[in-house]
Amino acid sequence: MSVHALEGSGICADGWQSLAALTDARIALGRAGSSLPTRETLRFALDHARARDSVHALLDPGPLKAALEALCGACLQVKSAAADRACYLQRPDLGRRLSDADRAALTGPADGFDVAFVLGDGLSAEALQRHALPLMESLWPALRAQGLRLAPPVLAEQARVALGDEVGERLGARLVVVLLGERPGLSSPDSLGAYLTAAPRAGLSDAARNCVSNIRPAGLAYALAAYKLGWLIEAGLQGGTGVALKDQSEADPAYLHLAASLTRLAAL
Image 1: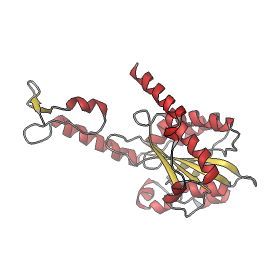
Image 2: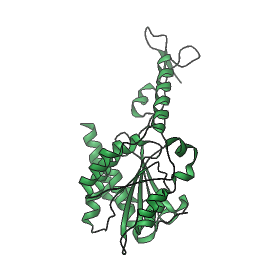
Image 3: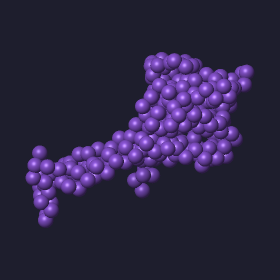
Image 4: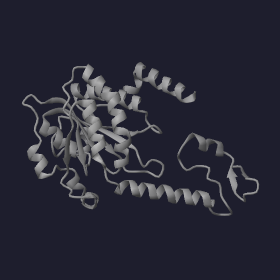
């Protein structure tokens, strides 16, 4: 590996530093003597602090609920059995269950729904606050156009993925989609994940789910994520999810065309 000194800085840069522009990963950091450069040490500390802050930040449900009501016509709001953020972080099991009050109040029509959406804060409320609405704006109208019976979206606080199983069961949904803030990384404190589960009911394991992760402008674009989710929803309603469903959406020519179009737009 070749290195060269940045003029006047005392920092030895890696010869492959040009590749760092292609990824958020910590590569080609250079060195100062036998240590990392001070700027990289400080950048690491800042990103670590952002990730920690993201885990503890609370969701502001008001603006998101209002926007979802404007888009979808209605929006329900629930809480998990975790009383507060500290309890949520220490007791993951409580984040997987509805509060007693919401369990009693949450019911669907006798004929149920085809698809229910649960939007939860998870471990990054920032991710839900930033990315859930743009994703829903790409996905919701397309699903409505297919004639699917969609439950009013459910906005859930202190939520884990499995909370969607109980919500979907209570609403009588054939399939539930949980949009959830993912565990923050050092380069992605605002990554949104989507988890799909057919025939939802309390007590299911993760083997019953499919996941689309890293939904955000710096990761999987909203339009591509909406396409993948639409494909998985259609397939999941027909034959189930989890180990029974392999995501082959990226082999679809329409997906490839969309991805190429977004790449060209990004290059302009």
